[in-house]
Amino acid sequence: MKVPRLAIALFAIGASLLPLASAGALSVPKATKLALPKPNAGLNQGYLPFQSCSSPGNCAVTGIYVATHGYAAGVIESQVKGVWRTPLSVTPPAGYSAAKGVTMEGLACPADGMCVALGQYAATNNLLPFAATEFAGKWQRSVELALPANAMAASETATPHSISCASTGNCTVVGTYTTSATTFTTEGFVATELKGVWHRALELALPVDANSNPLVSLAQVSCWTPVSCVAVGSYVDTNSVTRAVAIPEVAGSWKRALALGLPGNASAYAGAEFNEVDCTRTGSCLAAGTFNTFSGAVQPLVALSTSGVWDRALQVNLPDRATNPETLLYGFKGVACASTGNCAFGGQYLDKSGHYQGFLDNVVNGVIQRAHVLALPAGAVQAGHNGGVVSVSCPAVGTCVAGAAYVNAAKKYVAMLVSEVHDVWSPGVSITLPGASRTVGVAGGIYSVQCFTAAACQVSGSYESSASHYDPFSLVTRA
Image (tube, rainbow, N blue to C red; front, side, top):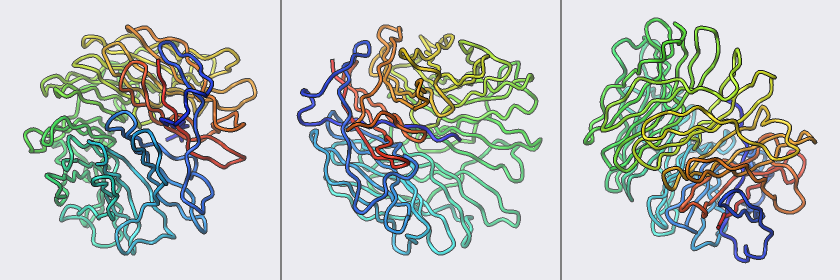
């Protein structure tokens, strides 16, 4: 997967004194640099992709920075009542190897001062999942998430991919692990925290046509109650075809994965997968991913569920179709639903001229619309190989904000915000970075946007503060 760019949001004291730019209904102040634990060599490849806000001015952000001796370490940035606190270096469970590094894989904050950060660490010869919990504003030591009983005792590679918390102490994690079968297989797991207690993870049941090694990939999970969730991803069937799946949890019981039907123009080897999902508080969901057509094109794929019933997956019609548009969904927060059947999503594709472009699309009353090309500011050349839409947030029906990036005439990546009001997307506005920086770099940009109203959004990401050195930044939009 291409490394996305990022741009971070901060409720900064004195923000009213900063210059503003306008993006439709938004006013966008200059971004503010966030600190990293010392010593550091910046963010690791600009990676600061996970943000969660429980209320305006109360947020957390997590990613990876380069610590002493060049080791990759986890960082958590916490904001309380609009003020960013001293950044925290994540301490994995006992027995971890600092030299092998730490990765951060997710974050959820269901209430003020109550968050869970998800990661992976190395212990002896194993790569294992862990969770770090913030309770009443204080981060506790991380705990290992116990894998299913058939996990390998040695040389295990277990990767958590997503976390969703329906309420404080009630969280769900999905990921993959390697079983101890004679022929090593990659399976999916779900680990559940109920009333503050983490339980041993369960192996998720696949469709009956799963390959002996299904090579499961679980991308995201979205929960609307402590016992009601949907996970999405893919598996390989007995014909060695990769198929997109949705896996529902109903009243606390995880059901067998559903392999969804594909559009009529899908290739026999469609390579279908879901990368992102978002569900409303009433349990309606939108899953988004990609598939291969019989002509070899890689097209966007979406599927809707209402009252637990999934429709056949449908192709998204791109604004400028090509022989092979090479569609990419970044897999962070590129899908957002405001109500049942009313969602927005975005990504990147290759147009007929060989240029990379961003796209935005809406689902209106359950009907998927034709996608719109991401409108770029004057002087932009294209979205670029590492550009396009990364994050979307929809605080109301027909009202959304997206974070994106593009390449300017100087061949530098620039981050921007674009807003939608009453189902109409406005041209975007470029982010003014901290200091004298003029680019977010190839690996930086806006990773996360979370809106509370049509005008007030918390934005987070990274930028190139000097040559190949990335730092975090943040800003809060307002009317």
